[in-house]
Length: 508
Image 1 (tube, rainbow, N blue to C red):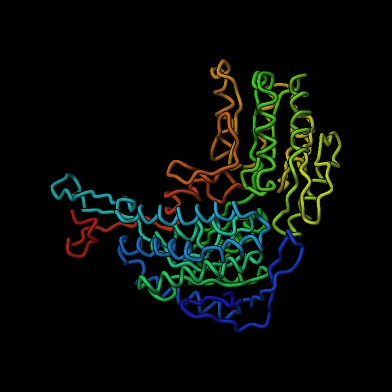
Image 2 (image 1 turned 45 degrees about the vertical axis):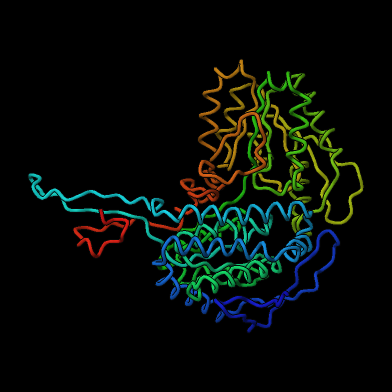
């Protein structure tokens, strides 16, 4: 049952007068559930509770925290079709996507549970004393990673489960020993409340301290701003727009005590198709990318929004075929009317620029909030000279740039902002000449895909989901996989400590 209230530790609260509803983009109607936005007092209460919980939670064993994470996964699964239907009602996404994302969410929780059962992830490092060393004796030094404190997690619009209430940021922070306050995304507040109830039940059942988790409703930016500014908060996880992420980053930097903001933001994910590949596999590549561009209505942060090629007859044929194949894929609804409106506006802005050509778009007559997929092309020179062509168009949209030669293609990559991914489509006989392209692309992205598509992020230790700014605010960390836990810890050293006062992991 949806209450519309905020979870403040183990209590439900609705002290405010500002309310809002979510929206069903597929039906183009407001949903019936009413949610109450958190007040300043409720925000403060959640932060104070989290700070108190941190004193106990940071010292709870990895085994017990793992049991907590597994209990969360079990409770999310126990929500069954109630969660699936709410997810679909608030996002317009299909049932298969809801179940797939739920599977990824509980999989991440169990992955982190397995990871923290052994304290090896804290990277214990021991340098024993050398009292007889000349000319200066060496002290006994022992280092581990410790949690930094309460974390605020912002729910993502395009992943109501896997990047939201119990998503990767929350799972990794809880695994690290940090309490979490979620600023629920207003587009899927009902989905968020259901998941929050599962987390709270799991926390109670596994005897976690009250305040280890809270979930706050908000329809605007004020709640998020107050949370990031709160002195009890020690870190932030965010997935969303460049404007939103940068605003939080700047706000956190202006605090009396600045805190880290790990924001995963915009990306157009450049794809480079070599001349031989485009000539040899025109139809295959066009089919593969038509489906990648339109997957999930293009609402993935790894959507291939930029394709770089070298002009030729084969390239012209490829662009035409890509356009035809993309235009035949049925339209589907976007997550919210505002997202659909932004897609239309930003896409039209690109198309209106000089030296751009609309190759193809979906020819049907989609209903309200359904996006028309578009393929646009331009020249390498025009792209270099016009920053407006570099912007992300969030949705089923891709710009194909026809470069004069390889030198211009490399120049374009050099001038791109930081990206989550880059992709190279090439033939085996070209491998020997790809080193400069790989190194140039490597400077701009967090991951390079070879002969594939960027859509799809495997959750594993070798995955890097991040990249140079503005793909993320700190390219040294990933937001996906076990190593995402390192965002929420800091190194700490004990010098010349008696063995009985050391953590068990350092008593060697």
